[in-house]
Image (cartoon, rainbow over all chains, first blue to last red):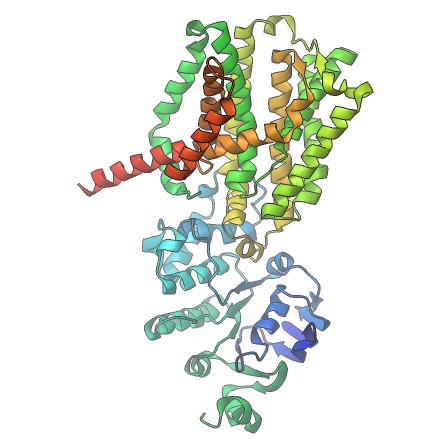
Length: 246
Length: 322
């Protein structure tokens, strides 16, 4: 058992954003969470990554209960995330940004006297090469294009060498070409680095093109969970979400 | 507060001769300065150390502390009380001053680091004034508004020149340590927190813990600044702990440039020397200072050193293109 949520619920006042969702994410999978706007995808994501705490239910990671752990502890256990609105370091260089993830993950952030630049050069360059940002290593985060920023965030999260990478709308705001590149990268990292990927996405072609498993949320409730074929065939999904078009 | 760190570091290295020249000037300064200006130079060095401690929080961690003078004052008071009341060893008194400032910094910081931005600033201000009030009111223990007089350094440090060299050594060593911290993985972490604390937390960093460590380091160096100043001035007063004193490093950082390591130092030197000079012909020093700060904020938003750095970089870029 890799990641499991047992009946997790999140209420914001009277609104039940996530309603008793029980779900299992299998190690090595590329797992998509889909659903119409307001279905609770992002909230579910936030419960897994520690941005929000569940009102009830449990989150288990590798058999350990993490329901009430703060975000940084979950990250230290191997869960890293990206944000829907790209979250990078605008005034740090691309190189420094990626380095930060490694410094944190490799537990050297309490080193007060060595030069930070001397650490993990090889790993930073490898990651930059992998995501195709090596030629912009010395550019500031806010001076690169939107698609590059998304890739930079991916590179930063990879620095923490996660086991479970949670991507909240990884292709949001990207052009079709950028989307293709991003999805290619995600697939590559899943294969090469053995990453398990949990992602939310609104673009159905992306979802069905890459996901091995899809879970569908509707009004906070899980209405389908299975392979892309199974989900595509589900009557309920067609009714509430795909509008019969898929 | 735009910092182009890589460029900054490269240019610092290339222009290392600058620093060496400055150190030489400081080493031979007593030969050329009157005793009055030597005293002003001593004050500028101590206040610069105070400003560097403050800028660790402000310029690098991105949180404005308005209570930094409390730690400066605590360092000074610890030394003054140990030396005058129990004739404690001078060197150990200074170490004790640093320790007291650090311990109080740990307690105050424990509460302050839970907040960010304006709430952090207001809470540090509140704690600063609280500590000031205790020192001010507790007459039997601290001397209240009389302060403490007769705080003498050892015999060989009684001459202003000797004490100046002592201050210079402490300043250079402290600046070196702070410089190392800022460029270490720890420094990179607090800079990342300033740039995007959410992103940093989601990389596995316990934000409050790192803020607390930074707060304690800043308190320790502020305490050191107070501790080395008091025996030179031979006395300490509650005014050392007030929010007005806390405002001085804020102004120095804005004046010199909070984004550059030596920005607050330049700011403090300008303020200290300008202060002594302006007082020669008007008592309305705050008016002059206010005008200066306004001018810098409007015309040089990165501070004076920030502006110079920007111009140097521009010229370098042009030269590179040619």
